[in-house]
Amino acid sequence: QVQLVESGGGLVQAGGSLRLSCAASGSISSINAMGWFRQAPGKQREWVATISGGGTTNYADSVKGRFTTSRDSAKTTTYLQMNSLKPEDTAVYFCAGTRWIDGRYSYWGQGTQVTVSS
Image (cartoon, rainbow, N blue to C red):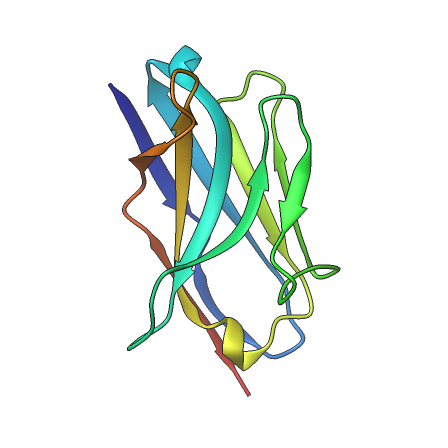
């Protein structure tokens, strides 16, 4: 089993920055890529960013150039650095991990609230 716990959310003014963390525990070796998703009130969950097992990153167009995801060398913690935040970035942010065996996002954190005021 794998447990993912996000932290670092909060309230920030537009233009500000936050760094989210996602701490993994349990069968960490079963995790390949790590992703970030978000869900705003009344909207569907959307993909934000991914970092592969090899360190390759990809970003949604809406956050490209503003958000950066990274992992520590032990791959126990994944980060999402969010700069130049906008009110439309307000959402609950989730981290998720894919399994090596099938590439599916099978592990999910509980989410952390990010609120950007205008």
